[in-house]
Image (cartoon, rainbow, N blue to C red):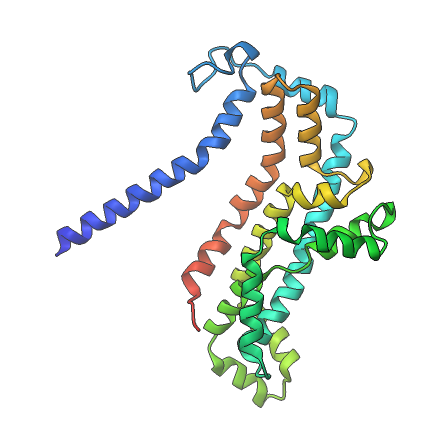
Length: 279
């Protein structure tokens, strides 16, 4: 029996290592391409024969005037969206997990149902609604439009609700005995114990917003509000056949996400270890 368990464990580790290697290949390919001369881009060699930083010099030479603005816009939008997700998802998750009200389960299933609707199907009605609200083609309101579009995530509500369900009710009962109401219990008991899932939601939300091009391309009409994905797209338009600079810009735009994930991966691991799925 121990031999079978050992083989299963080794096979499981092999699958994880293979999957990890498969997922990291695109980034390594981008990094390798950014260090290649143009004549080596489509060769079969993985590592460059003559490594060079010419692509990075080209990036900073051509995009440097707008790069700080693109970076700042991406950072601002992603940070605000993270705060909005944490506030609304934690409140909704607590209500669905702990509060009792008519139609709670049905409403929760409706929220989950929205996860099956792709953004492309919601584009026209949401865009028309934003136009009627005067948030499109109005430069000061561009940020408000993107914040309204990305303020709530059904996935985050689901994750936080499931984590709240795993917190022992004895803690909540003790807070009620001390005179805490629902909001006091939420802020003093539930949130401090939910730091792993909140950190996970923050990391995933930041990553998704940082890399998002779909909604910003629809909502952000002014070049002054564009984000880093716009810069990559614009750079590709100017250098459509010069792949090393494009990959260099991709690598540079990936570094903040990589740093945040390395710093916050322990929170994701803690959430996976401490949470359980309950109906």
